[in-house]
Amino acid sequence: MTAKRTVSLPDDQTAYIDSLVASGAFASTSEVVRAGLRALREREAAVDRWLERDVVPVYDAMRDDPGRAVPLESAMDVLRTRHAARLEEEQDGRGTGRA
Image (cartoon, rainbow, N blue to C red; front, top):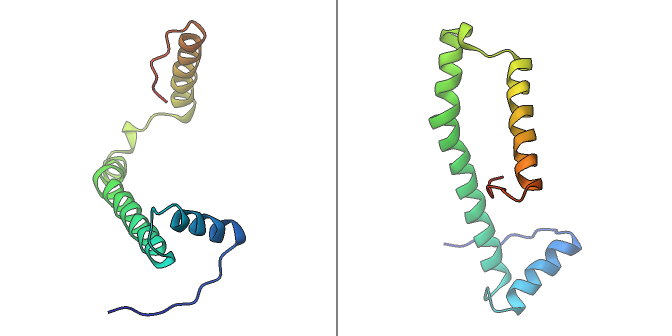
């Protein structure tokens, strides 16, 4: 079952949709919108999985044992050191390619 909807889009988004259809990547504006909605659902599902798998367990562990927390300044020192090392590697042409 399908339902018709009327939407208003900025000119740049309309032009992008038109270019996708004109290129043959999609047969119609509706296909572009459906693909965009599928991608949005997939992204939201990925965020939900990340929250459930990675964030919630850490939150629960920190709530149960706040003493395991690292002071902000200590964490920032580690990040600064890693960042400086990465910059030095890149300047020396030894970059790892990691972002």
